[in-house]
Image (cartoon, rainbow, N blue to C red; front, side, top):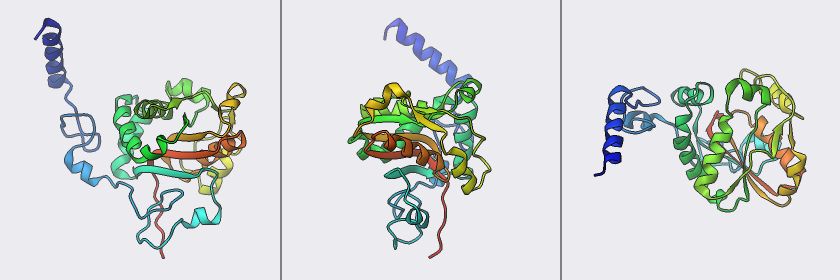
Length: 246
């Protein structure tokens, strides 16, 4: 073992002693970034049966699409999410989004890549949902951009964060009703003129962190298709799940 490796091992040991890794859910000690075994089992991963468009899970496998998608089909072709947005997952997502915990990005992106891999193989571009420049100045980073870049690297697909722009500042979506969320984002996104030519007949994977009502990603998909995109697949880390009674 050379001197540089010995120094690295020593620094890693010191880091483990003074800054041990903790589970992102329960904060117990773990050996690698992510979740402990107990919390891993508590995460509600999204799987079949589910809506073939928005991926909202069904209790029983008796429908192809959910009531909301049947009532008004969204502009995106499909949306897939990794797990439920609930008390177990909320904390780590908020730390990533608002508290500079960007070290979580590679793990999150890996989970997202696994659920969208078959669509990544067909995709031409990976695009993040943008945030307004004033919010970017305040937060210092766009969590969707970080995720999209990692997913693009994993899939070997072109990543272009400058195509979509948040052209209008809107109030926070958190706490708004579904109807208000839909109205809130109308006309708030646009495609940068210098990049319109990149969208013609392209298959796009659109990346965001949380799917709540789908209002934001749906408006983004509408704009992308208006400018020539052929297919828009949405991938999010978490989804606010609606439970349907049959």
